[in-house]
Length: 99
Image (cartoon, rainbow, N blue to C red; front, top):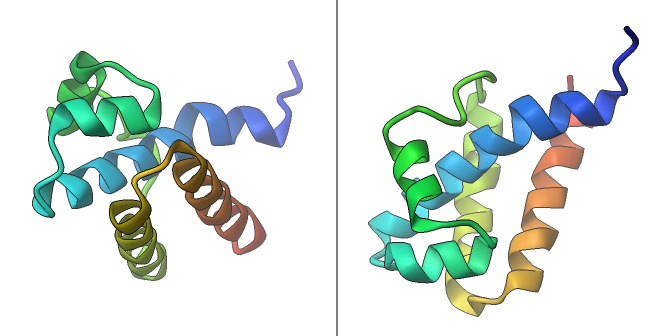
């Protein structure tokens, strides 16, 4: 079966990015409830990310971690779903271009 590159992003890369963004936002004091609302996921999903039941199929390098930190800061400042989507896309695009 042939898989489109987007499938790799959806199943492997995106969950890893979400996991790291969630961890960064929690460190900044954002509640799980607010993060769940911003990301359009449940608090149970957040728990799974934090327990490494999700977001473990892709290794993030140092450069991407720095990008994620910057994105977390922008999400923290704006706290809007549109910003979350924009930042997720920015990070995914960077990974896909540099892989």
